[in-house]
Image 1 (cartoon, protein in one colour):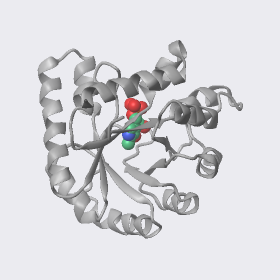
Image 2 (cartoon, protein in one colour; image 1 turned 180 degrees about the horizontal axis):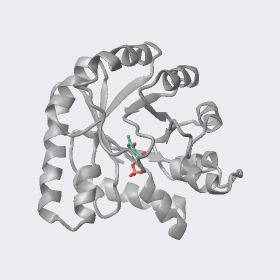
Image 3 (cartoon, protein in one colour; image 1 turned 30 degrees about the horizontal axis):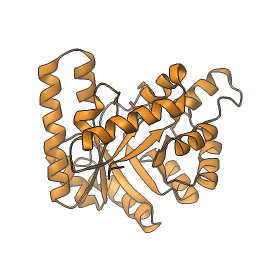
Length: 246
Ligand code: PXP
């Protein structure tokens, strides 16, 4: 085992459940299975439109999970109230657009300082570890620190997309941006996480970045679970992360 944690995002178990509106597959069962397979935490995003995770999923997860819950949330009064009630271990603040398919970019910690600062304070005051989901960019790292957030999660979506498109040059450039941001973030005292779009094929260079303490991975793991089962998909990811770190 290394000091790189794996947070498993179970949103898309709920996506499949909600496709039929019933009770299965059950995200709580997935969370427990992920825990048994070696996940260090569970991540769940309660979106404004409740397209996957629902309020009762969050209640159940915060009540029954033994490993830390990372609650992904938009910076809205509604979500702050839910977080303060559920008291997850961590809250990751993400930008949210109703029409997007997934979280498309990082939050603008620079431009939204005045709006975000009281929210970060409130969550921190409730002993919830606040993480800002940001682009790998120095100005965003400085702004996250200025907000008083102890953690940042670097958005690896652009790096992943470049790889999916077969653009090796761009992929390498974007990897370098993540590397530089991780080193800079750690140097100014932030705990650095990363996530979005990570797969067996692209996880290793990110996992090898020594300053990164946690990866949050969802869509690929749940998709792969269709073929090999959730336990096997998580174990394989864990193994690749450990190999990269060794
Ligand atoms: N981290 C954050 C902040 C996210 O919003 C998401 C997607 O919900 C992830 C990690 C996981 O991304 P993926 O599902 O592409 O692995």
